[in-house]
Length: 526
Ligand SMILES: Cc1ncc(COP(=O)(O)O)c(C=O)c1O
Ligand SMILES: N[C@@H](CCOP(=O)(O)O)C(=O)O
Picture 1 (cartoon, rainbow, N blue to C red):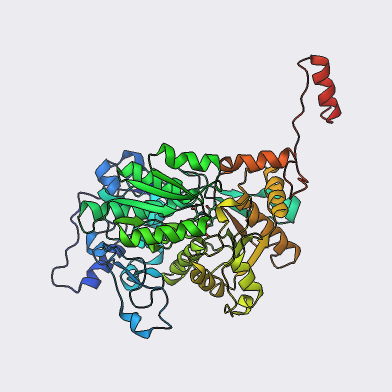
Picture 2: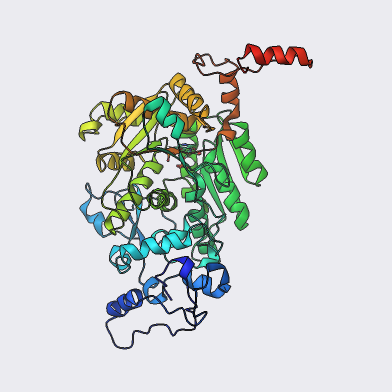
């Protein structure tokens, strides 16, 4: 039974008969199921409604789910991402239970398409109420930030096939001091996607991909022996953890000596087959595509659109955290460029289903050492002409997870920028490390990629593009603890390409009270 009242006034609904379609048009019956008034409270107590914690497990699960008469109509399938060059591809469709990564007609990327008419049978207030009710609960899998939006993600998967670590529901940090003191802004927020199981936003997409693999293996709909990816360190960590949780073998291709020790140890610990390859990320990506085309290894990179279905839920979560308001700006560090499109998709879906009424402006922030989208943007992309796009050799950057020169989702990113009056900005090594360090001084602990996004924000504020009164969200994509080497080097002033303007030194002081007091006095503490 779909209960329309908030959790604090949930009632003992499960005893009531469920709706049947009995001759009426199905659509009308579905609407009735949803629009029926709030249930009475008297069955439990004449005085006060039961609280959430008074409900039985069955009642809680019922309160978390929509009637099957509705959910049976929800469908998703693969379609080509872009059919402009091949109109005949418009008819191409693939089941999510098939192993396919590219359009068989265009050879281009695929997209997960939902039946929006079916989803529209639930009204916008009902979706909001349902998502709010699920947030952070323990009922599996709906308490996950991703699976609380299950109908918008993988509507057909049985709950028991879902592999979830209750990802999402990450803190939307009000960057009060950084906003006010550094940028003169009151309404600056940092979405802490790195506060998660494997320490990056990749968990959001990987729970969906590995769940679908688990489903295909259990239902024997596909021959899959392992899940594999190329990685700059975060995708591999998420693949390894989710596959280990599901008992599915995994293999990761890593560019030798180009990822942090903390990232490297994650797939090792989780039992992946770890291949360290003498190439860069783009080389690893090329190899994994060749391998998955020949062998029963399932591709886990974001070229696979299943990943984006999970990642798009961050947009929904951000709107939800703002009581269903859309921020003016969302700034995302970009590498392989799947994530910015996931953001776009999430915001577009909310608007299409009436939960919100506008799109934010999306900003992709790239490292100046690996900036193919930025170059294409300044060479025409800012006015919608992307014809000058070229892949570039990615140079070494401290934002090592976005050291990518031939992004797989380049066309997806272009659509996200075009569709949101978006902007692309870049940050040098010095700018990204300074921005991260400055923001750290106000209580954050940023990874270098978040530093890239913060540096882009600073530039757009300085240029007056982002206004003082604007509401902006910076997406923090990984936990700073995965990247301590570069932070230590910054504070020890060991970086050859940054002056470390905000370095904070350690003082070595003899263990003597007088010397300790002197040291504190010299530092102006009293
Ligand atoms: C920490 C971190 N930030 C940002 C990104 C960029 O995301 P995307 O590749 O989806 O652009 C990645 C991976 O590429 C990453 O690992
Ligand atoms: N930063 C990524 C690069 C690969 O991106 P993906 O989203 O396509 O898997 C990583 O951590 O590997």
